[in-house]
Length: 288
Image (cartoon, rainbow, N blue to C red):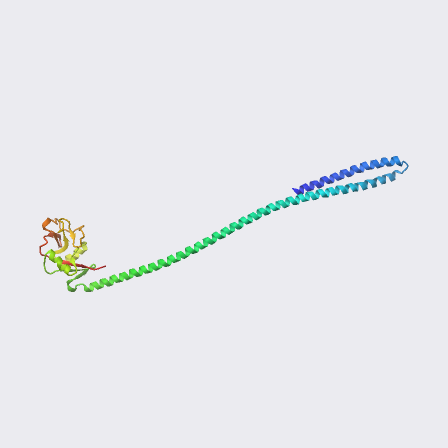
């Protein structure tokens, strides 16, 4: 924009100079011609024209010099305006660039900070994962060792109990020792005999254990540790637990208050008077 203004000013001033030179030349030439004609009518025309040309040239030179100075001053002003405008624009652009650079630097620093934090968190997570993996592996190793050790102990314990199987009439089955009597006594005396041996009358927990009892007793009936002597109709085992599902013979128990103790036969359980004499089975539990 400043260059266009500058060109327009130069062109205008040049035209103005040319017009003024032409005007001054015409006017001066006319006045000088009239003056010389009036004062010296006898001077030759050729000399008068030569003097007129000299005067016009000198005056035109002065006018051109003045106009050139004006033109130069105008050009200087336009140039200063142009420089000032460019300098202002450059200053604004510089400020914008500095602001952008500052913002970019802040964004870069923030990104570097976030990257550093992310790296620290990642490293911490990796360390925690590594520690967790190590602890998990240790626990798995320890657990496997404990399982193996427990299995070995159970095997050794079973083997140990099996070594005592059959000694002094006691038979081993599922972490318990059993002994069947060769004589007959009442339910109360039978239980006393078992407790003196560190045992008690047998508690039958399931059909498998009942099958084991049937093999020991054969066809004989044996006292087991089940009675409702404390409360009629409420059958309990000798350890105080209540009977939930019995293996009674069909129609049993049917003795009411007169039959408060239980005899086991291969065909099922029967309630009998506790003073009757039967064989019995003692059970001595061992810790698992």
